[in-house]
Amino acid sequence: MIKIVLDKCTGCTLCVKSCPFAAIEIVNKKAVIDLTKCNLCGACVDVCSFEAIVIEREEEKKDVSGYKNVWVFAEQKKGLIQPVVYELLGKGKELAQQLNSQLWAVLLGADIKEKASELIERGADKVIVAEGALLANYLDEPYTQVLVDLIKKYKPEIILSGATTIGRALVSRVAVNIGAGLTADCTGLEIDPESKLLLQTRPAFGGNIMATIITPNHRPQMATVRHKVMKESQIDTSREGEVEVLNYNGKLSSRTRVLDMIDEVGKTVNLTEADIIVSGGYGLGKPENFKLIEELAEILGGAVGASRSAVDNDWIPYSHQVGQTGRTVCPKLYVACGISGQIQHLVGMQSSDVIVAINKDSEAPIFKVATYGIVGDLFEIVPLFMKRFKEILKK
View (tube, rainbow, N blue to C red):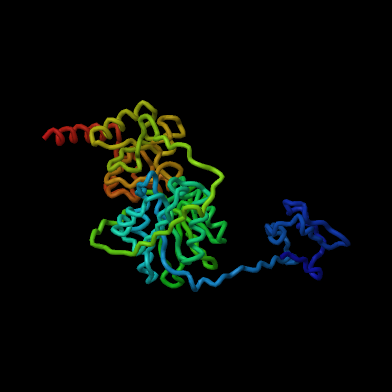
């Protein structure tokens, strides 16, 4: 609530001028707030040098003691578990161990229970399989209903999902329904050793800073995680786990339905799955010079990537962009040619196993994350690379 401390108010009108909603007026030399217009933005509080305006916020706190275990939403398409799930299971296992709890996976689909063993082999201690005709393919309403029901029943402490088209659509709906906090597009997850809260790190302000977010008063703590920023969990066929199968046939409804699913047609660049990526940046000077990058990528059997500046200048299509607003990649080898390495780009590729950076500027930020850095002219160095690789591959 907001109130005026009449003894302190002088009627100076500073609050009237600062209010973006025209919710304050001066009556008998005192400020009066129209509560039907005020949205508690606090602009008036900041300008009042007499401390005559006070906002009191009542923080809603819930009993979070009964929430336990880390959950991973096991996204599937056409019955195939998506690769981002294995990354979440790897990180989820770490988080669960730090919290002395279990890692559960939640799999929704139709006739899909045989896939539960894959999730157990990747680290899940328990898999909840919800099956039903309306769960075969992703639909907003039935998927949300099932996940909300399961959360209310089992009370997980943490829920992780891939920051995919499906993950973003689903988890935001679930968070609203259960009144939980949600951090989107995370690139880092850790457990605070003292509070045991989930530290959720994501780019903010256009990628210029990295923000760490906590959800202290609500459960579950929910986060979507970008693909390829975390390592996949290893397969262990000796692992055993519990599988619970729930039948939702006849229990769900949806105002929409899937008519058909058509695979993308044409030549596309699957950067997220590439083991080798050669990327070019503004240092290439002009779009024609991307032929050099394409040739090196072809020799190495890799994909072609690009920085945002190269894409913004229409040197190469957006499908090649690596970074916060493009693709997040984690190849075995990433070669950055003429890329300075602004934080937006680093967020999308810094998890690569080996990073080779080529740049004339010895102070370029890319060298801070590079495994190997080469200071020099890429137009001299890249042809030498290609010549040497051709010689090696011929042997």
